[in-house]
Length: 149
Ligand code: HEC
Image 1: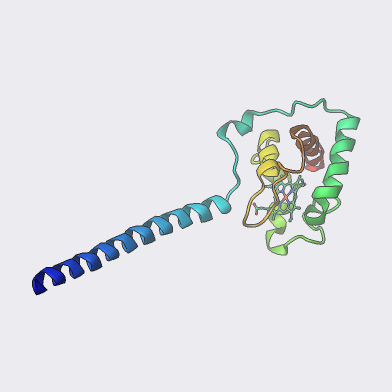
Image 2: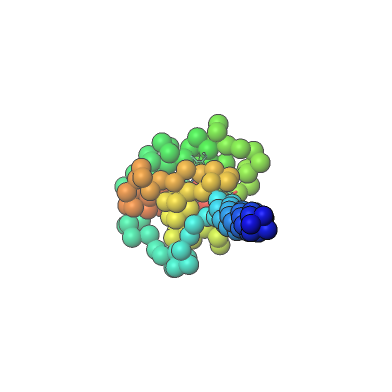
């Protein structure tokens, strides 16, 4: 009787420990995944080939500039140098949209998804809830016009 109780108690303890371990492991794995995602852009592999569907003209660029001034200027600055009032100086280099050297990692499609999905760390707000796809493409056209060739 006594032995039986001890066994049951031990089994419970072992069982509980196992559940805790599994939960802790699952949690750790998920947390690591979340941090990894948060520290990267969410860009589909096909983005590099995606072209801007809008006509490249003065009207598209003017519309893009209007949206840029509303949604992006605070961080990226009036000329795209990454020096807006809300800019974090730590990221001055990656926030500079005028750098020719960063053109290769900023094709039209890649810039589209950076704007559409945003990122968590360092923080750039996603625009998918605030802009239509065409509005984002207009911003892409404008932003790409700021880059030095
Ligand atoms: C709250 C500040 C903030 C706002 C608002 C913001 N961004 Fe950003 N953006 C950032 C930060 C920070 C980075 C750099 C992330 C990194 O280090 O890779 C960045 C990076 C980028 C990049 C990638 C640059 C590169 O060379 O990889 C593009 C393109 C961009 N932003 C466009 C925009 C556009 C367009 C808007 C407006 C729709 C916008 N951002 C709004 C903070 C912001």
